[in-house]
Image 1 (cartoon, rainbow over the protein chains, first blue to last red):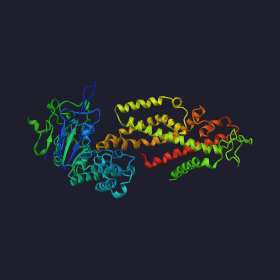
Image 2 (cartoon, one colour):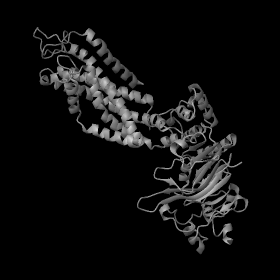
Image 3 (cartoon, helix red, strand yellow):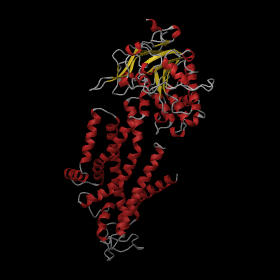
Image 4 (cartoon, rainbow over the protein chains, first blue to last red):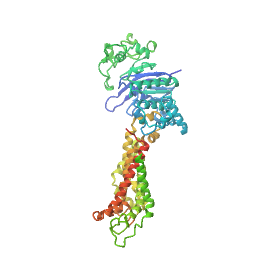
Length: 327
Length: 266
């Protein structure tokens, strides 16, 4: 069976009348399988949120997809669909959870009604049924006392509970793909773990594909099946989570892992990656990580390495550590 | 809770004044033939008499029905029109929104009194309902501008994007996500507009195109009382207090409505 979501050559461009077009996401490809939790990890500005928005056709008006971009969802091509044609997919077949639950909930609507909005967006349901479903969804996302909370206002809930409500809203349309864009960034560390646990449970119970977008490599460790590491608009490494943490191949991934504090590491210093992420206007030639890379060779500045398929689904785009080095 | 009771109390009081006031107070037109002109409040005339010896309380009671009726019609129309046009102008984008926006700007640029004069010239002398209608028809631009601004801000709020990500249609986003958020400031503007309308109606009477004397209205009473400010202050005080009460009732009532909707707190 083919994966529900297959993305090929995803490019997000910002055309500018005077200056050259800015390419914020530069030809990335990945797929997410049923019941699989794939994490897309990268620093801010690397294009991961634009990737998420482009999947749902929610790019800002100033952006457009590249001509060769293909986003297939359950065999249907989404790239190039207009607003009306996209609507049946949103909420019903693919849903999204955003970063800031407080801002993503309508402050002037009870949470039960907001879940109801999602339930009735694509079909009609009698009010009693809506309420019943809303309570069931709140139960599913682990909200205590759902029969009472269904009538609560968003401001009466904690951040963690608000994010659970956002999840309930996202689940209302029974989506086959859930995109979670930094769902835990606005939350406390302990609450983060609970929300991730919940995401993990839901994809198992519902057989849902989940694309988790985050800047925090630490939170994906125990949860994700696969990790895609993104740097400056490209995926530089793609690997099953266990392999990635055990044997990271791309110098950027290695740098990210070395900058994470570990319990077993004792007193050794954390190693930050030198330099900063360049903005899309100033992306260097060749491999975009080369100016910050400790392993760089002459070739790195000249040509961009591609994400070569390697052994055991562990792919890396690097001239030095990837399979491409022998080419 | 207490605010709610206060609002209910004030509104009930005004409604009672408008409904039964004219029935229990005396004749508002009967001029005092006994020479009791400009007399101070007494047991016979609880709020005194005016320059023609007419009972101020009777005029206040009769005026309540007209003034409050006109204000209610006018504010109702202005708020509905203003909300509708403003939310479309600010909450959507495209040619319709652009045209509506320029229309609102244009309507704001026209002085209200001049427009009213033109309307009266075209339509002829108007009764209280007609007056309420034209006051409403000229009152919407300020509310529309306010709504437009709010709607523009809310249109890009994350919760509207979230609704779009859920497959909500543009119309549904406008009605369920944008419109409710614009209500609090509009409610405040509308309640404050009550006082505006009452005074404007008085001003129109003064210009001879509103409710004509001797028919009593609160605004008309205020105007008529001006020359006697020093000698007979109760003449001014009675309609002024009534006006303030009506405005306060509208404002507190608006507040109560707003907290019923539980507008964005914190």
